[in-house]
Every structure is written in C-alpha cells, then in structure tokens.
Image (cartoon, protein in one colour):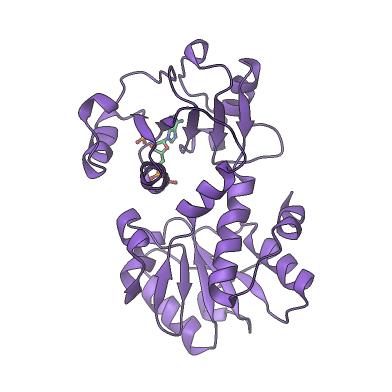
Length: 267
Ligand code: ATR
C-alpha cells in the first residue's frame, strides 16, 4: 500500500520515491521491528518530482523520525539536508534521512561493499556497466577500497563524463563491454528491468569472476543467466537491499539490525 505524502498515516519511518509501489522496504523494515519487538511502523509514500522539500517538511511535522529515499529523489534529499555525511556528498545522493536534525547519509555504497565480504575475488579489478547514479555510488565505494575500474555504458559520452568525475583516465572507459581481467562484473544498468541483454563479451570473462546485478527478480536476470551459462559466480541485488536497509535501521535506532529476518521477509 502506498500513500500520497499529504495523506501520510501515523508512522515513524517511511520510504519515499516515485513510483514507489514496488518497494520491498516496508516489508523488510516491518519484519525487523517484529523480530526485535519494536513498536514502529514503516510505510511507502509517493512523492512527485519537485515536492521532496515540502514532503520531508510535512513528514517531520507529523512526527516521522526517518526516511529512506529511492529513485528519483536521492539528489533532492541531499539538497534538503543540512548535515550531510561526506560520503553522501561525494556520491551526490542521500538514501537515508533523519528528519529531526535534517541529517543524511548514504548507505547504498557501504551496503554494497558489505555484500562482497566472504567472496574471494582475487585481484581488485571491476568492470562497471552503466553510468547513472547507481554506477557513481558503487564506483566511489569500489575505488575507496582500492579497486581498479573500467567503465562501459551504452551511451559512451556518459561513461566519459562519469570517468572525469571520478578522476579516472579516459582509457578506463571501454568501447565494448570487455570483462577480461575483471574479478567483478557489476551491472548497474536498468537493462534487466526491460528484459534487455547487454552486449558483454562473456567469452573473455575470467573464470571465477563474480557477475553482480543490482536488479533482482524471481528468475535470474538476463545478465545473470548469461553469466551462469559461462560458468561465473552470480549475485543479484537482494542482499544489497538488505545491507543498505540494515545500515539505515542501525543509524536511526542505534541497535543491530536483524539481517536474516529482513532477508527472509523479502526473499
Ligand atoms: P540509476 O540512477 O539507477 O543508475 P539512471 O541514471 O537512469 O539510473 O541510469 C540508468 C543506466 O542504465 C544508464 O547507464 C543507461 O544507459 P544510457 O546512459 O545509455 O541511457 C543504462 N541502461 C538502461 N537501459 C539500458 C539498456 N536496455 N541497455 C543498456 N543500458 C541501459
């Protein structure tokens, strides 16, 4: 169930987006409260483009404590905040807001890194597919932990632009999606949403590389299905959703999030 922001029900936490009807966050956070016996409510609230400021002010005034922010509002949420975590500033996106003091953080980037723990990937080299906001966040996360990056995007110039922002050389932007040498092949594009295939030169992939799709669906995405056929390890975006949500939960509440219960609730 989704509420227009003017009709936000009594609750403590919410996710805002547009559209926001497919979000799994309410189910995931509600499961966390239930597991820990916390009396909080978490709801999905639709906020049209251009209304993020007034909506956040409204939610604050009616007693909400925290808000997660999803597409396309992460930059507007950052602009509304007065206490901005340095990482959120670098990524240019806030996905977690504390309303009382207008503070924000980004939990997407560190949540993504959490999900890589436990994989023995070998050399820290990643091929990043896509050049939107998600690509920027994950590129910042990966380069911060010593990864060497190559970028590929359908629209070449956008990849060049992203490389400039990240202080990467022009040579790191590829004309074809060549995964040779990469231990991590990371799909940040929304191609999987439309069932579209990306033109990846799979036969050049390193054996044992991890193909990681930020999207998730009941069936493996076309990207992950191809990666499996070529014998690669695969991971979809569900664990990252849990990891970012758990980090938001912990920032708001100062107590460890029940990650297993959160994952179970949305699997
Ligand atoms: P986000 O903020 O989630 O990263 P975005 O800024 O809209 O979303 O970026 C979407 C990315 O997916 C872009 O890199 C886009 O490529 P273009 O820059 O060429 O538009 C990419 N993308 C979307 N659909 C795609 C498809 N069918 N094939 C390849 N790339 C696709």
